[in-house]
Image (cartoon, helix red, strand yellow):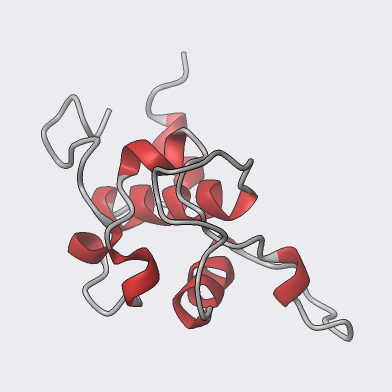
Length: 109
């Protein structure tokens, strides 16, 4: 819906959306996130063993922003990524001004 509305394109990058995002991921596109070709690292190993609260999408975005690098150069390989989907949800929230759940509710019958 955001692409249809012209708010972003499949080629919008994380660097455009989050100017402070580290170099390893600044060129990752929406298309690469959707196709699991971003190379973003899995967030699960980054969660402290003594964590007592559920990890939120915003936490995942922060973890990605502090990671040293990804698994591969964006667009050169494929690896399923829960991290990518969490980052996509945060992009939806940032651009729509709504929570991800609210955004989805707008398009459900």
